[in-house]
View 1 (cartoon, each protein chain N blue to C red):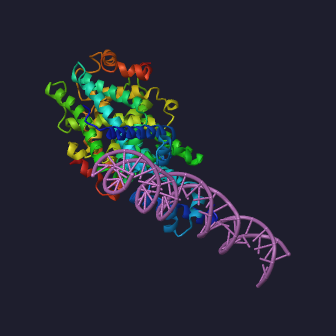
View 2 (view 1 turned 120 degrees about the horizontal axis):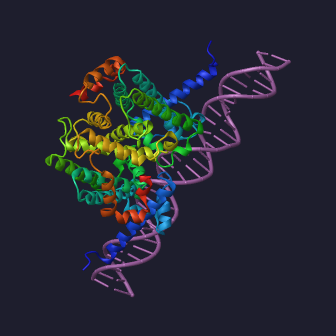
Length: 249
Length: 249
DNA sequence: GTCATTATTTGACAAGATGTCAAAAAAATT
DNA sequence: AATTTTTTTGACATCTTGTCAAATAATGAC
């Protein structure tokens, strides 16, 4: 039944093993301390074998990235299917993004490393293509919601802004927020009590600014949030252990 | 008159030379291809001498960062002194940030490298302290404007958001936007015509969402923008060659 | 079952980087 | 001019990544 031969399955299993070890090392010691030797050693293979799977160190990185992005995509698709108006769906997207960041704490750092310092042009064209395509898919999922909202007249964007551009802006906020949290500035002691909650408030203000109906002042989005938690991401919440509870406080 | 001896001046000059070469190499070849050997070679000193100035490669990076941050701080201070209401000042801050990003295109990448992958704990405590302090200064400059606006009743923030938190949110948008532009996604072909203009529109929408007076619908902020260009940053604009012209298009 | 052929795995090796340090060179002092 | 102090040097040790000929294992023919 299985279309893969025994050999192929073995190779795939080993590939996954290498990636797993790579991720563990990356999370514990950081990218600079991640060595192909150590992956080989921990997997009980030789370095040469590891290099048959990944033509360079960066390739490990981008494949881990792709794995996490695939997860983000699926979370977004689930969020987009949330029952509610478009603004509620957007909130589900926002939540999915926060959840994802909590589940994959190292991915932000990986993206940084990957995108900075001419790292990208060492990876395989295939992986790079996959990576870019996933970014596109993810953006388009969100842009679809915005377009739908326009069609349903829940929002009317000024001429200077189109749906993709709005997504770019919202994405900037989320992405930048996560990034700033990843730098270890003493946000707390500076007076930022709960960064995630702030980003949500900012996003809501932005949508209010565009007069996206229903406004946050005329609708109970707190209730929406609870529905999102229950209806969309109950499993993940349970797994990661009260992610959002912290933020409600 | 000079408090520095000849020797001290020589050392300082050499330090600056090394940093200069470091920046050039960084911008042309990226961080991974930046080598202490090459700095030494180009400066016509030996590697050992370079290591007397920077105890590690990362130290070069953070000192370049600090240099750029100092510039950002001074630009922000000039923006904060702009003649106008607090929202106009905030717009001047926004403009200063965009301008700075254009003048120091490599700093975003440097921050990425610096903050990711356990790089930060290799640099000297002194530099790290200076770096953090500058971040604080910069944030506080902006938070001061927000606080003043509250005092002047130009805006009233909800209880869930304090001034520093609002700054964190706005900063997230700017920072994330620059970051996303630095990754080389095909933003253009995705439909994002002018990323910087989008970020400005988003920021304005956010402030509108908080009912920050005067709203963008009841005030000519385009005129403000022109005043900012003329009154605050004419020199820099001239130097970098019509930065903002592009964005107006 | 044996041998030949093909595929896979290996680890020694080259190349290049960071960071160290004893010795050489230069400068200052006596 | 001799001596002490400071500064500079580049050879080393060490740790990377990435390669590749040779060793090993798997496959298939007869």
